[in-house]
Image (cartoon, rainbow, N blue to C red):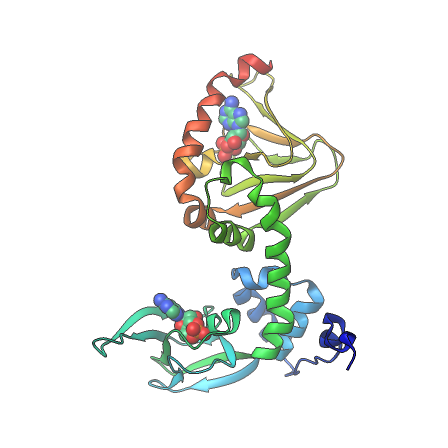
Length: 291
Ligand code: CMP
Ligand code: CMP
């Protein structure tokens, strides 16, 4: 057999996802539930549609164990309605412990598919529940592939970002998974507006930006900082639970930013807090040196 037969192109061409028709309301609900999960954020519209159609409805009664710890995993689940407990049995004592309770909109059973390992926990319905089940093939061919493409695409870039230089490789990968892209196609677009509430931390991926600050209400904003590829901004509102301390504008015709929301920032960049706070001291002198 030729080497080509094993190629990615052939693998992709031979895969056909199952189709379970959905009403527009069901599709909208599934999209809403999947949106917060990093795994599904890398999907384009067509891929998302394939995934939505591939989800199969399953009804469970309270007490049903739909995942057994240690078993092979052939699907993952999204809760449409109801509640589940994730339970781990400890080898030494045989004791079972609920490690997580899941509710509507939560996803479970993804680990075995992501990492090709046995089920890490059992999952049991704690009420009459409806779940959407996604098969391993669709997950691997569509979701996992898009997620790992995104991971690979941004990991190399993030490794070169100065402020992240103390992060371990797996932490950088988690940042790549969680990051989203915002794109601007006009110079002088507002990325951040001084005084607004803010919940995004930005890293400049392509292009240039600058921060401008109004020091005395009513007076003109002064340029306080310029940003190039690999620089970050927008950390202060998150660190201090404060409104935005300056405005940030794009200064190149096109500009691409990676950003994390407050939740991901807290979870993934918590240990950067000291560095970020130390670095923030530069703002105290930046106005006089740039104006
Ligand atoms: P998976 O290992 O495929 O099957 C069991 C699922 O339980 C697992 O994926 C996760 O989705 C979920 N789970 C929730 N909490 C935990 C935990 N602490 N350890 C392992 N799995 C967990
Ligand atoms: P944040 O206050 O969240 O939003 C505006 C961002 O501009 C701020 O975080 C900093 O990252 C950045 N910035 C640059 N210079 C200053 C400055 N002198 N004062 C406040 N923020 C500044």
